[in-house]
Image (tube, rainbow, N blue to C red; front, side, top):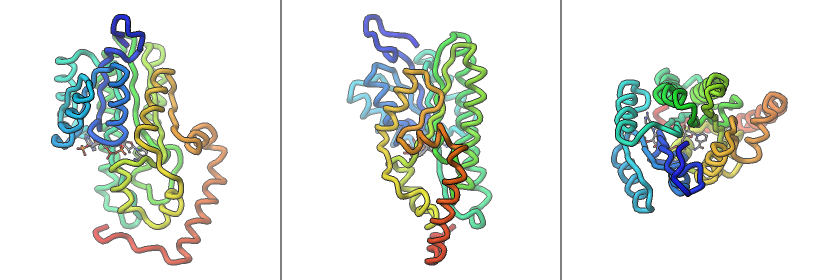
Length: 284
Ligand SMILES: NC(=O)c1ccc[n+]([C@@H]2O[C@H](COP(=O)([O-])OP(=O)(O)OC[C@H]3O[C@@H](n4cnc5c(N)ncnc54)[C@H](OP(=O)(O)O)[C@@H]3O)[C@@H](O)[C@H]2O)c1
C-alpha cells in the first residue's frame, strides 16, 4: 500500500474501494479507514444514501468519491470500478460489504430469494475481486476483504438462502488466498455475528421464531466494532477475521463444535415448535 511521506501509517494515501459503503459495516469501515488517511471510493445502488454517506465522510475530512452500481450487474460494476480507478488510481484495498440477507422457512421461500442471495452476496463479491485482482497482482500488493458471515461458518435454521451464499464467499476467499499469497496480495474473509445495522433490522422482520430462538439471543455487535476488527485484520494481514468471542471460537473450532451446537440449536427449535411457532409474516 502506498504511504503518504512521513505519515508512518500503512493506510495513509491508500485507495480503499468499499462496496456497500453507504451503510452499516461498509460505512463504518470507510470511516475507520478514512481516519487512518485512506482515500475512499464507495459503491452502492441507492444514490441518495450514498451521497449522504459521502458528504458526511467528506465533512469529517475524508477524501471520498461515490458511484452508484448494482454489484450483481457485472457490466455496471466493472464500469463503475474502471471509472473510479481512472479518476483516483488503482485500488489498494477492496472491501466487499454489499450484501442482502433474507431468512425464512425453506418450504416457504420463493426461488427468487435463493437466486438473489447468490447473485448479490456471492457474484457481487466475485465480480469486484476479479476487477481489482489483476492490478494488485501486477503491483505485488493490496488487500481484498470479503464480508461473509457467521452463517458462512455454520448452517443455521432459517438461512437456507443466505448461508449457502456466505459459504460460497468463504470458499472463494479461501481458494483466492492461496493463489494471491505468492503474488504478495492479502486476502481476508470476515465472518461477523449479528451486527446492529439496517440489514439486521430488515432481516428481523422475516426471521422465523425458531431462528430467533437459535440465533437471536446474543447482543449484536456495533458496526464500528466490526470495522475495527476489519482494519486490524488488514493491518496484520489475517485471513479469517471473526469479530466477537463466540464467532472467533466458531471460526477456529467450528468443525469440532458443530455437532454440539447443532444439537443445542435443535433443542431450542423443538421448544419453540412445542409452544407453536409463530406463522411466517404475510407476503412470504
Ligand atoms: N448486519 C449483520 O448482522 C451481518 C452479520 C454478518 C454478515 N453481514 C454482512 O455484512 C455485509 C454488510 O451488511 P450490513 O449489515 O452492513 O448491511 P446494510 O447496513 O444493509 O448495508 C448494505 C450495503 O450494501 C448495499 N447493497 C445491497 N445490495 C447491493 C447491490 N445489489 N449492489 C450494490 N450495493 C448493494 C446497500 O446499499 P443499497 O441498498 O443502496 O444498494 C448498503 O450500502 C453484508 O454482506 C451482510 O450480509 C451482516
